Length: 341
Image 1: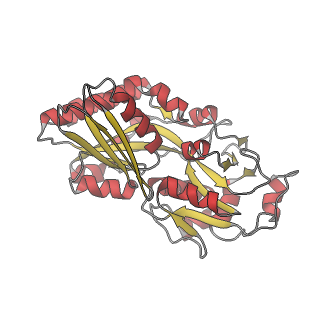
Image 2 (image 1 turned 90 degrees about the vertical axis):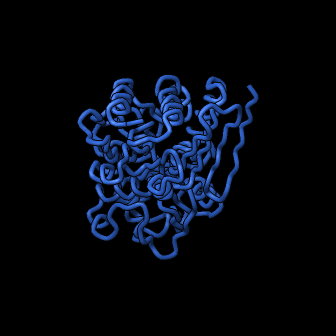
Image 3 (image 1 turned 60 degrees about the vertical axis):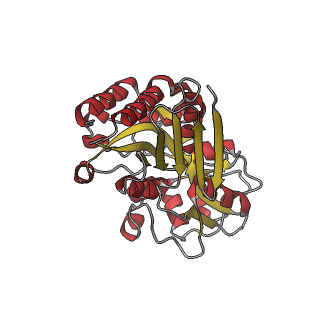
């Protein structure tokens, strides 16, 4: 089989295609940038065993992904903001989780090493509301005794596009700060503090933080680790300081009760447990229940089944949390019961 891997960056978007001898035509998806590093690797590996299936994925943000699947311009949408069952039923869609991952704060401070700074949700909310404006603010200093914190202005960097990462990040801030909840709430897009700077996609936020001295932003963990960014520790719901790593991600993910989640609607922020990372998210796939092209949907579901059955180790290496086997089983049953061809 003749296979080529093509990766093209367009602003904050990442387009990945596997080309070869086609069996079910092109499989096209668009949406979340949060899982893009994982999807890139999965698609690349699947090309070696699929017999020539072509998959195109555009990482354009969860808002755009939802819009494109609703407009039927793609075969699947991808979002980090879960849709409630009534929304899914209205549009004739089903959603299912493909993986879980973490959102981490990242900073640009030359004297601070990755994983050295500590932050709490309350302090994070005050920074993103513009109430804490310098790195030597007493509330930050109090949490970070022994660190050399500069009297430098904090520049807030946020997503400039409709984003599931933003939805989960603001969901977390709404849970830990009543003032944040009242002023901003939880949404894919909000009115950010004056003087803040936007970046498109996780990659855009990462690039802006790396560029601006004194900046702080929020990105999916793979972007932070792969770019060797200065990420922070966080205080969790149990009051414990935890590092962003596979252990803390897995600890938070273990609390999810997917069996009793209608439409697989699940929010993983601020989970209990002494070892839990507090800003977790699940990433979802959206497809229509009614499918006119049996060959295409069979090919698409075969790919998603492969990610569950054979993609776990790839997910772990990239610091994502794979879906447990029992959850994968629930998803496959949903395909059988709800998708008509």
